[in-house]
Length: 163
Ligand SMILES: Cc1cc2nc3c(=O)[nH]c(=O)nc-3n(C[C@H](O)[C@H](O)[C@H](O)COP(=O)(O)O)c2cc1C
Image 1: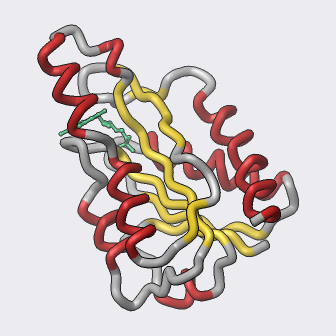
Image 2: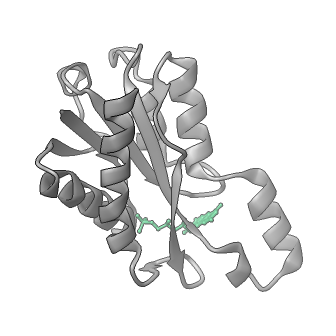
């Protein structure tokens, strides 16, 4: 199976998760390419059997580069298997109840990635996976998130094979 992971990152955490997912695929002997969302070309998508897209959540949304990639009319996502992930702050860590309510109700990066790819005819093979960052701006990955990301690759492979 040929897997493409498209990611964006600001502080580096989403990249670390993307790398851990890629390591998980490699460990399972799958062929994987890890490409920044802004650097992908149409053949990257065309030759992939499974596309995994990950972005930091910034103001309840994916980054501009992520959205540009999933909306790129030159990328043919029709019938393409996909799964989304994002990095985000744990709402439990937000002290202000008001702000917590806003963050949880306005959504996360993976929601918009999924919505866009589904609209473009891609086939979701797994629930989107959130990975948690900590600190005020979310600059530090929570412990063991990379291990979780590594293991998630196995689930994705199993799902992709059976659908
Ligand atoms: C300007 C800004 C906006 C953010 N907005 C959100 C948000 O709406 N929801 C959330 O859970 N985290 C939010 N965060 C935390 C980011 O999700 C976190 O910094 C990011 O996941 C880290 O990933 P990266 O290291 O790949 O950039 C925001 C952080 C910044 C700096």
